[in-house]
Length: 327
Image 1 (cartoon, rainbow, N blue to C red):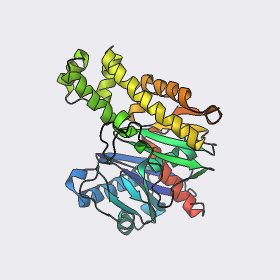
Image 2 (tube, one colour):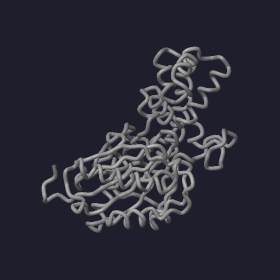
Image 3 (spheres, one colour):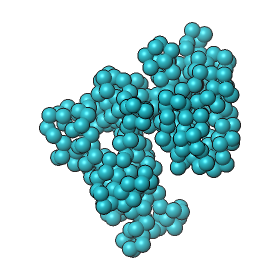
C-alpha cells in the first residue's frame, strides 16, 4: 500500500492481444497491476473500455484512490505520433486510423496523458530502472512477433524529428529477402522475428525435415517460435539451425548498430530473446566478428531485466520526468 507522500502514476501497455496496466511510484516500484485481453478485434470502443477497466483494476490492487494518480502514460503497439498523442494505425490494432489516443484517455480518466511507441517506452524503462541503468548510450531491441527498438543518447531518449526514431527492425539485411510488413524486403523483422522463425518452421514441416516439430504441432496447433524452441531443446537439429540463422541475421544488424551508435549496452527483450541461449549466443558471435574494433570495445549485450513491465515502467519514468520538467 502506498504512503501519502509518494508520487503515483498509472501506465498502460497496449498490444494487439493483451494489455497490461500498473500503478507505480516515480522510482519504479509497482504497487498494483493488471493483465487482460485487449480484444482489439472487437474495435476501438471495446479496447478503450478495456484500458480504463484495467487501469481501475490496478488502482484497486494498489489500494489507493484514483485521485492520487498524477498522470497516465500509454505505451502502444504500432507507429505512434508521440508529439500529437496519435496512433496513426497499427497492424495489431485493426480499424485504427489517426486515433487521438492520449486525448481520449485524458478525457475519460481526467489524468494528464502521454503516448509513446511500446518499444520506445520499454527502452526508457530499461534505461531508468533496468539493465541500462547508469549508461549514457544504450540501445533497446525487442525481438518478438515483430522487432522494435529505442535509442538512448546522452542519457535521454532519441526520438528524431517526429518521435518515430528507433525502428531498428527495419534495417534491410538482404534486399532480395522475404517481404516485410513495412513494405520492404529483407528487413531484420522479416528474417529474425518470432513470426519469421515460425514461418521457417512451417517450411521445415512442408519439406518433412522435422519429425519432432511435426509431433509438437499435432499436439499443440500452429507452429510458433516458442514451439520451435521446444523442438530445439528436444534435440531437433533443423529447429536449432533456424535459431542459429536468425541469430546470425540479428548479429549482422547488431554490428551495424554498434558501428553507427557506439553504445555502452544493448538490451534485448521479447519472447525470441527469452527462448534460450542459442539465438543470442549466435548473435553475439556474429556481432563481434563484424563490428569495428573501436565501437565494439566494452559493449555489453544483455537480456532485459524488466521483462513484460519495461513499457509500463518506461511510461512511469516519462510521466515523472515530465512533471520535473525533464521530458
